[in-house]
Length: 239
Length: 87
Image (tube, rainbow over all chains, first blue to last red; front, side, top):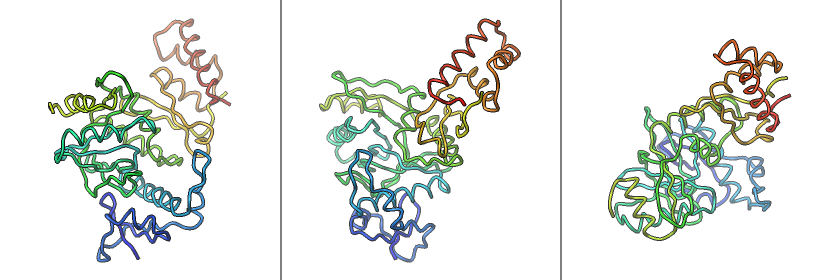
């Protein structure tokens, strides 16, 4: 029996494949904790994840990690006011910033610029799929095992201060992101469930979320100057 | 006519949106942004209504002339038909 603490929830997950065990080892907790939810997935659930959106077929091991991710997400939305969001989440002196974008736009590349500029003050929360949770009216981002190909994640929890959409541009400048546009982003980039009650709950959570954090658009190239301008506008600091 | 089953209307951070739920997600995966007039019309059309009834409802609720109301209803219905949301 294996137990993992992810987003402050203890899950029992008995994985069949080493792939998940390896990626989740930072989150393992000892058996004295009692699991709130058994997120072990069935063969059937693994099978359902095998077909990739681009027409490829995933390995069973990879499909298992996706099935677990979906199962955990269902528990988070039902009982923990939480959801998985596709973003690169970073912490600077314990201030949480989420970079989001359409796939391939370069949110990870931008996060790396911040790391270069901020050094030890910078920590990755999760470079691909962090969890966001609402706790007593405040929003926090958590590291999770699903952190993309570079495995950049830490088992930490940080209060979210800002969300920034990355857009490629020759010139570097930061704008406020209109809340209407932010809604579209949150509909596209999160793991959602089709059920009505879960959809309504999700919309209620992101409504409160968007009212409590700052939302920006970072128009940027991939040079260090882009990071300097974004840090200045979002954190109010000159680096 | 009527709005198809399987949509929820919700206010998110000051904006009214409609999204598909359940089986409907497969055919409609986006979101529809609605202004106040559209929300008003949407709620009526959820239960089923004719174009003329929608115009009358607008005239009773808002301080607009018939021409404007007719136009608003037309535009609204056109938008929904384009997205194939009406049956």
